[in-house]
Length: 83
Image 1 (cartoon, rainbow, N blue to C red):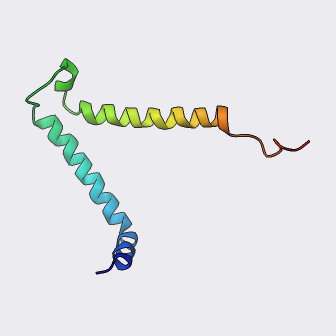
Image 2 (cartoon, rainbow, N blue to C red; image 1 turned 180 degrees about the vertical axis):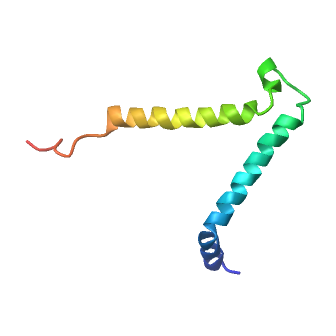
Image 3 (cartoon, rainbow, N blue to C red; image 1 turned 60 degrees about the vertical axis):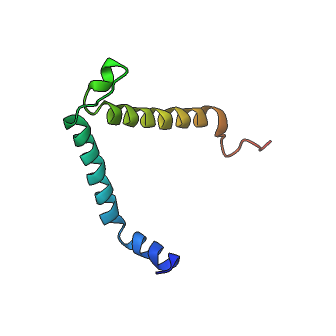
């Protein structure tokens, strides 16, 4: 199977792949909640699902802050260079 056909197959089955990824991620969160960690440096690391929650909140904050900085510092109006 060449790369072109493989990419076409992945694009055609994007919905199935997306749901598969969601199921795998949810399974990892459930496993993190059910299986206790053997080594925790901080007390909050022993809370089940903390890593997934912290990672999700961190990604959302990175996106929000970068969009805000982009709007404040980078974006200009359409007539910015007009006299």
